[in-house]
Image 1 (tube, rainbow, N blue to C red):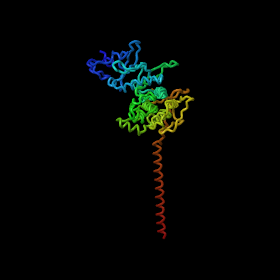
Image 2: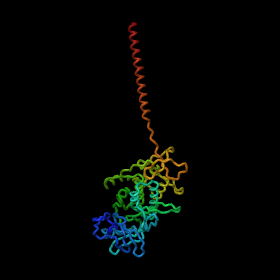
Image 3: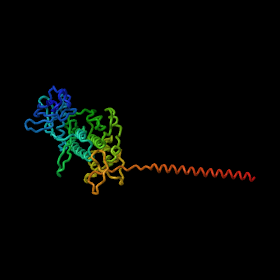
Image 4: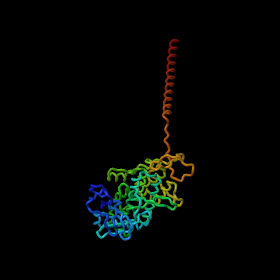
Length: 411
């Protein structure tokens, strides 16, 4: 029997839906109507609500229907914040932001958003399914995220919850016929809209909003005071995690995380992934600085710096980079070149005898140490010198003694 909560079939004897935790004998939304949409199956769920595959009852168009949790539908402030996502997405108008097709409150009080139905996975799920990806692909995805944020920030909208789960990756055929990644930014539900029509009470002063591991230092203390640079910090955290295989700052509790984010610099990305281009690692490191004035000022600046790290910065868009507070050691001109493999750990390869248009990584300069044999030889030489000097000293002493004896006998 199809589960009324997620739309899947479960093994005989199952009492609770494995995805939602609801009892199977309790009615669920699958097969029911929410306003003019028939709910087909569960796609995902989060802290504020769930997303279902649904069909418009008049046009048969399938959508991703986001529904606010039942217990939150009684809170008018939560409904306004939930529906704000539709307003934010429409205001930006970027193709890298998911399109909201419809929004409203059903007759039973359920708030909903009808969004375009996408084929693909969010970035978190993509990595869980496919494993580590080559860094060139990951940076390409992040560049599209920055394009979306540049458009949002230009409209005075700050996302405030940037994380891999809110980056949806689908596929698109480009003008040359090649299939490439195409990014859609999700979930503007807790976004900050800087406009005269924004309701002042939707975000209270002193309240932290976002996902802690990706939040900027200033975001922990007052989400209302943040600007677009908080989003860029979150993107730098994402990129550090994607390229380095770990979060820049790790903690066992929320309280510990606050202290570390406020006071500790993460290890430079170059120390975690030494094969990455130095300019790229320095770009990510700058994005993680504590003071927002020291980080990348705009999404465009961050994007140009990443492209410069790959050697593809447009000539018309130069990037000015002030001195970094934390920098990677630059590679020398004599360093060997490496091409990335298919994982986040680079594997050596012999460069092709043609002009390389891919991503070339400078290997770190080898640490030169004196061979053990040479050290031993130096030590042995020192011992020989000491022995010779001791022998000479003994000989001189013996000569003096014999001379004195001879003088004594002669006297």
